[in-house]
Image: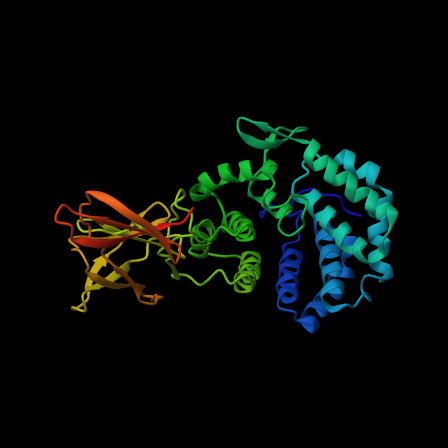
Length: 389
């Protein structure tokens, strides 16, 4: 059994890139529930287990377990070739773990593979190794200069570390022990050397649900020349994007009222919430893209012809400012780029009248309405639209 630990050195002759490409292709087929295609290629990989390194073996075990779970078919899990290979690793674990000087991707693949298979086999020896791997993962990493490192080598974790949690589960995407290091990697993504590094990072952000961060890394990678392995990873990511329904490139998100939290403005809401004469109304939106896409806000006041504002990118938001509005103006607007167009949104500019005193306060449909009088005793109502709290 080979025990080379090299994984992400794509130029290394120790790594069988054809097998990695096949494993990523199987993973895509499983995500699409394509049983026939994934089964044929997976059976081929099982027959090559004795010629694989530990990472490749772990990834194969993981996919076999996933196949059994998705299709309720444990025939490959019971394969003598697979079980012989798996139990050889388990029986030699005490020797193998002493040779591991980097527990990131390799540990993730072994953990994910054993856990996936043990879901079906329920073997105490396998369970013992997965528990030890989980313990080692949290015990063996430390921060050096703000970056997550493996204690034994003080080598900073690189982008491949994200593969340990996606999909293998050695770390969860939200684990603080990983998140802090990923933030550092995110600041370095522009200088990442290979498309594979950028794609691994995008893969992780996809699992985190970070649509804008994902789009940035993914767009950068897609503009590079891709190898067959990188193309296979792109296919897997594309399948996951559709499954998560994160939206397509250029998709616009705009929620006028944000998430309802008045203390934490969102990057896709309208500001201010209560609009009165003289206010500059900022229309914020997010666009599913790592690069700037020209996005326009079209607006109409009181049914007149639509005017157009080119939105500017400010941090996570695209922003357009509508100015010069008067009391009781009725405004309709929508947002558009070459890929997407939102529905029409509406708001009315509130009338602001000075008040000598408040005579009454009522809550109507969750809004606070103030009733008062001026010196001439002409009564009026002003609906302040403050949420009841």
